[in-house]
Length: 144
Image (tube, rainbow, N blue to C red; front, top):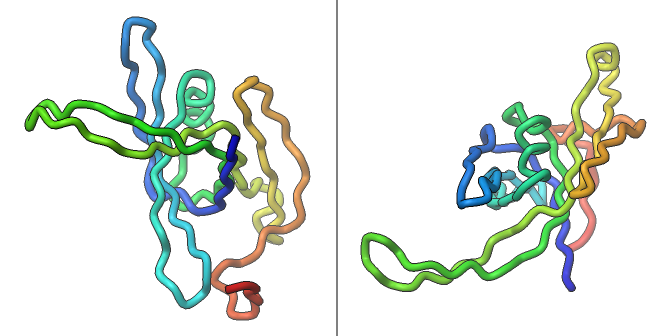
């Protein structure tokens, strides 16, 4: 099994739906991922189901929020209602995510807290080192 990992900023507030006979909760959200300082951001769409979708609704509330996501890519095939043609696409299904948000008492020194959330519905707060100023010109980039 392949697990993928992205870190980015929340583009807009997530969209939520309840679908099917079992009233499955579904959350859709997008992250802007900036791999290198001089390149434009890449926008990636994600989907979460069930308890994970509920937690997305509860925790991912602010545009620009820094989010770390672990996800699986899966095929999603459906028939387009307008054209009647079969469509094939890949969905990024979230299994675990972390939200990096600053706390009120730490806003002055840019200290942050993170909340790790997984499908087992057990959030836990963990102290994190200060997260970097992503606009800072002194950040060194490594790799390709």
